[in-house]
Image (tube, rainbow, N blue to C red; front, side, top):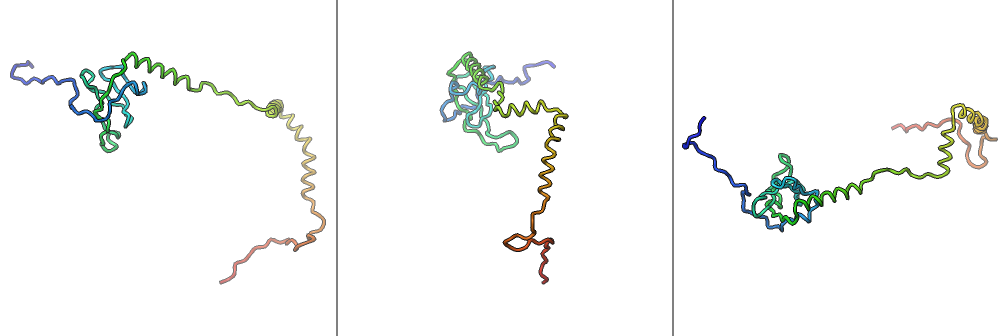
Length: 189
């Protein structure tokens, strides 16, 4: 298909923010944000985390005089009500350069990695615990049988003394102990 002068031609749209509105809130300074909340890897498509709703929001007007946050909503798309965030159209002050941001980001990563625990040290235990663990390691099945054989006569003596009935079945003071089990009956109505 050939193009003739009679065919309409699309007009090139400007690459700037569509609205002239600016939020009345004070401008966001990049140096006051944590470096991990800013993404300047692709400067024409810069993104930062909104202070109010904590979502990633693109920055518009990167080639214009005024840079500001894109108008955005506070809730998730399709799930929550469409309530506009109060930081929409908020101006942004670039008070740091991209190399400064990269340096701040690498410093933050180093600091965060130094805070994470690398090894778990075992808890020191007492001498008694050490003796018990060594004794358990030295015990074999034959040794366990021998230990039980030495204890068995004392266990038999203890059981025998438990089975022995004391002299007299009636306490000296108080009522006699019943020998039959009592089963209470409900009164008839």
